[in-house]
Image (cartoon, rainbow, N blue to C red; front, side):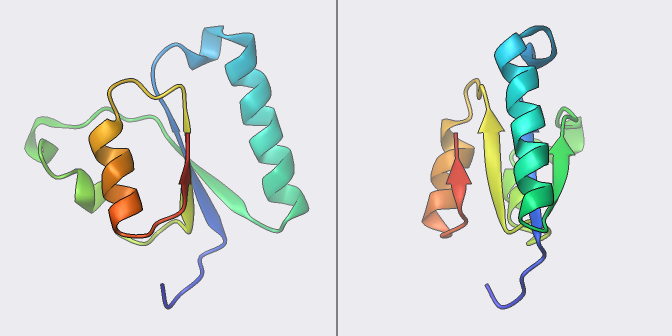
Length: 91
């Protein structure tokens, strides 16, 4: 990366909002971002039909320095893609 955005992408799969661990994790990410002078971008939107097979565009556009996936369901391809492109990611 040549540019640092100071933005962390947070990706939630469904069900996090009714899960106490998901809510506490969101609060922890918020607190950590504030403490370390980062913003965080919450990614909730489902893939529109025209974006099928274009996940790279969503995650590799460099708007985030890295990603945190909360309770990922069937996200193995995306996680492998991010690792392949050396984008920091944690799940």
